[in-house]
Length: 93
Image (cartoon, rainbow, N blue to C red; front, top):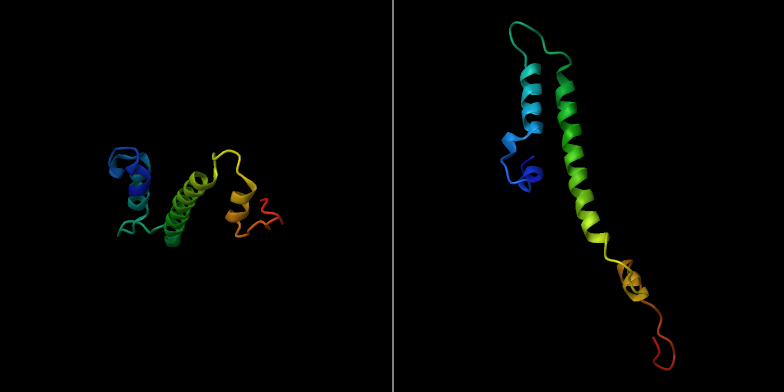
């Protein structure tokens, strides 16, 4: 959450996502008055949300690296995938 909200310019504790997670943990804690419904459910939700945040971060990094660079030359495209174009006889290409 710190990484996701760091770009927004406000502390992560002021975000609706943080308040929702804290409220969910408080609602699911075990007390002497009631039993927690499905104790593993909240941990599963937290792991799922963590996976979502990581995936969004990785998608943004991939999008920034590979998107919007316009038309590329054949030599540049070959270099991206680890190939070299063959040299033509007579010094061309």
